[in-house]
Image (cartoon, rainbow, N blue to C red; front, side):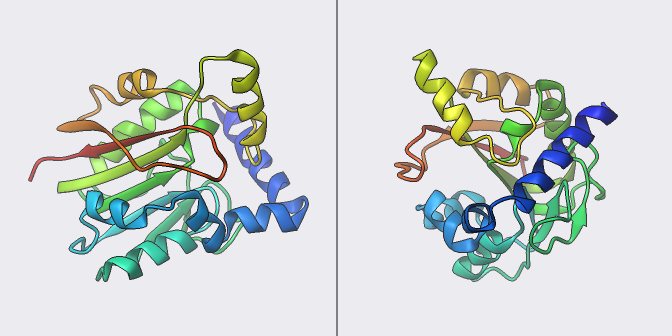
Length: 212
């Protein structure tokens, strides 16, 4: 497990130390804005306008999370967590399976294009932690690149989205739902945030919630 974590962190740091124009452009707030064109829908799903506490689990700094919070008029400033401090400024560095927060700490959580870099055990462990830190009535929004049926195209997509990842696992709704099940959520829903133009790769978008 320690070796797996080191590999994930090392891949992230190599990506950011590489060709800066590409890595930084994709990780910038403007770049992430292009990746997530329906920010207003994300705000609505998370009820971010009334959230008092907001966590962004990131692989690229919290610039986009700050844009979301401002767009929502949210009183909450996002707390940004990353697996490495090599990128833009973050508030905390931690592994997703061990979130350093008390139970029921956050009303809203975003997890955007993170889970493809984690294996199934890590995703399930992170889901248990996410359920633990969500406050009553809280919601978490997970967005990740999804697989396609044709093998050669799927392999191409994996290469395209492999930047900053030691390994890439593209999961569809079925696998994602199975990994999130029995983690303590009161609702797990497939939601639509498309169409996505950049890159033109399908996404799986999942809203997890705790009851009030």
